[in-house]
Each structure stands twice: as structure tokens, then as C-alpha cells.
Length: 567
Image (cartoon, rainbow, N blue to C red):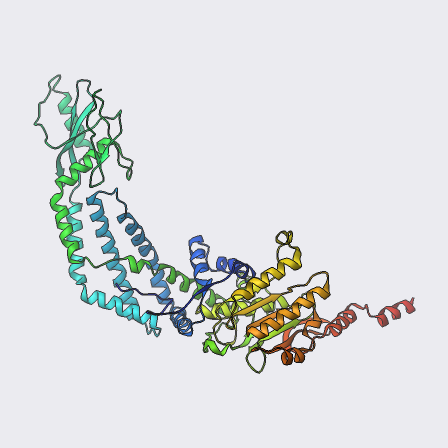
């Protein structure tokens, strides 16, 4: 089976960059992965995919189309979900094949199980994809591949061969064992007398035992058995032969033989000896299995098993998107623009975390906003507004919408057009424990320098109350230089801050600082003293916010004076 990925186009030259641990934390990706699935394995799979991003537009479109098919066809998700367990079994069997201790017979039988599972998976995937009007390049490529395999690999004959071979193996229902004893009546030699196509019954065993004991002291002398293995239970040290089971060491001069047991099964030396005898007796069956496998030597379930993480990724996201939509919230398929445009046009964007909370049963109003990143509106926004006015929520919302879009997932927007970013960097307040050595201002300055070392004009920077130190003048001085540097580099950014002076005189900054990104002032609104959580382009309004809040709670001078005069 050819290399197939549902995440990346064939022969793709896309370059991927990893999100920093700070970005992973600040975007709450751990919370989101746990909302997608309770399985720790699946959480890790999804996290790994989500945190490796590319600005290659072809790859982003490819993923979006695949996800679109997963979302449109619940039957596709249901069918592939049922196959996950079978694919997991294939993966476990494949791992077993690599176990050098497994006997040749076990390897062949497990290889047979692997091929049988592979045939079933290919058949089910083929039938599922043929029944749906899929559109994505990724799933159409998979459909063609499995159809070609089914048509060109002789699947009907293969299935017949597998069934016939399994039937031969399954005919063995019991074995007859012969054991020789030494002078002290300890087991000395053991071997297989016969393989039987009928199982022994307890009554049959008892009848044979009673027949023997009724003969009194008579001892029956039987025929010696060739090629049986010696063993001694008091000295479990066997050497392993080429098929992975135990053999007897040379007997030392003290007369105490040493036997090594199989590490694979943990079985006792007698069992190891019997396995060797069974394998020898069943040589013909082994040869039959080998001849079957030779005809299908190129068939492997490894590539199919490699699709497991990708299938999990798309299924879990499609399930969550459906649940969010069921709550009446928008989730849209992004339109992908050329990465060199460095543009984003978002209508009705909201924070994905709020959508998840609504799915979990929390009831509250969600305010959606519009924002554009382009030559006219701006690419760097200085966001100001009152405390708890939604600045951090909005900043995070933009980052999550971009991240989902670039992974091919529907974004929490009414409409979204985006030029992919090559990375998303965040600069949120650090834990106090991380600022002991450098102090908060020093630690934040160091992190900013590290971001600028690797950011490009295609990057996105999200800053949340950065440089908000006790010494406002120092923080403002550094913040202005950071904004100038972002303009010069050409990034897209939201910088939310309480430093209202940072958002003043931006015309002067845009004029005097060379750069590719216009700096713009953005504010969160207050209506009649109530936070509206609406975001719009406007000069900073710090004093008017404060006056609205003061009026609401009756703490303006005029209101207080009036109350005093009344008394």
C-alpha cells in the first residue's frame, strides 16, 4: 500500500513549526483536547497534530477538504470508528511480528491473522467510501488505493486461502504426550505422541486412568520416542534455538542439567519442549502457510494502521463541531488565501472555549466580533478597555480561530478568510515562580526577545497585558519599541493592554517607523456602564470608561456631593 496521509498531500514540501510551550498553555490546548475525548491516547494524538503548523496553503486546504467530508458524512465517521479497534489489533500484531522470541509457527499464524484483519479493513473502507459522495483529495486518494488493492490483489482467493489455512490449524483439538521418568520418578524426557482432531473429555481421561490403575502393579512398556527434549524442573536454564523455544544445555559434570525457559511465554521447560515437538510435527502446515503468504508478500497492514491517529483527529473534531452547532453557534469552513497576503477577515469570531462550555451545559451569552488584518484596516491592534471587558478572551479567540483553520477544522466564526501563519506566538503573564531570578519585567523582556529571534512576517503574535509592571513608564517605554519592531517585521498581532498611552499617537508611529504592518487602536466597549464585550476600531477611551463605571456605581463627585448634601 502506498504512503497515504489524510493530513498532508502526496509529495508535499510543507514546512512545519512547533508551537512553543507558552503558546500551548496560553491557548488552553490541554483544556480543548480534554473536551474532544476522554482517552489519554487520543488527547496526545490530537495535541501532537494541533501543535505542528504550516503556512503552506495547499496543505491547509487539503486538510480542510478532508475534514469537510468527515463532517458531512456521519456514516463515514461511524464506519471508520468501528475500524479503529481492528486497526489497533493490526498494530499490536505487527509489533508481535518483531518479537524475536516468537516461534516460527506463532509468527506465521499471527501473520495470517494480520492479513485477515487487513483484508477485512480494506473491504470495509472500500465499501464505505464507494457509498458516499466524497469530494476531498485525501479521501479520494484513499478510495482509489483501496479499490486498486482489492481489484489487483486477488482478495476473494486470498480470503479463501486464509480460511482454508486457518481450518487446517484449527483441526488440532488435542495432543497426546509421552513422559519418561528417571530412577527417582522425576520427569526426564517428554515429547508428543500424536496430534488429534478430537478433544479429550474428562470421562475419557478418567476411564483410561482407571483402566491403568485396575491392572495392579503391572507396568506397560511402550515404544521409545525419538527427538524428544530432556528437561529438569529444578534447573530452569534453557538455551533458545532459532525458532525461539528452549533447548537443553550440555549436561555438566555434576549431572545436573541446565535449562533456559522462553521469555516470551514464561512457560515451564516442559511446555517449551512440547512447543518444539508441536512445531516439528506441524512442519507441513507451516509450509502450507508459507506458500499462502508468499503469494501475497507485498500485503501489509502497517500503512493502514498509520492512519489511525489521523482518523481519530478528524472524527473527534467533527463530533465537537456538531455539538457546538447544535447550541446555535457558528462554525464555518475557512477560505484559505495565499500565505504571502498576510490577511485575515473574520466575521463573528468568538472564543472556542466559550462554545465548549455551552456544550457542557453552561448558559451565558456569547458576544461575537469582527476583525480584519490587511493593508487598509491594520495588522497590529493595540486593544484597550476596562478590566474584565473581554480583552483576554478576544485575544485568545483570534489565536484559536487561526489555529483551527490551519489544521483544517471549522473555525468559531460566521465567516473566515485567512492567509496561513507560519507560527502563533503568545506572550501572556508568567507564573510568579518563573520571575524570581530576573524579575517580572526582565523575564517578560527575555521572552519577547526569544520570540523575535524566530518570528517572521508570516507569524502571529498575541500579547496579553505584556510589560504591565508596577513601573508604568518603564513598561510603556519597552512596549512602544516592541510595537515598532512588530511593525517593522510585518507580523499580525493583537496586543491587549491597560497602557492606554501605548494606543495614542499611532499615526506618528506608522509614519516614522518603517514597516509592513499598520498599527491600529482597538477598544472593547462599555454601554451605560455595562461591559458590552464588543470590539471596534477607535482611539483609546480610558477616561470615558472610568466615568461610565463611576456613574453606574454612583461614585462621581457630583453623585457623592448630592448624597452628602441630602444628609
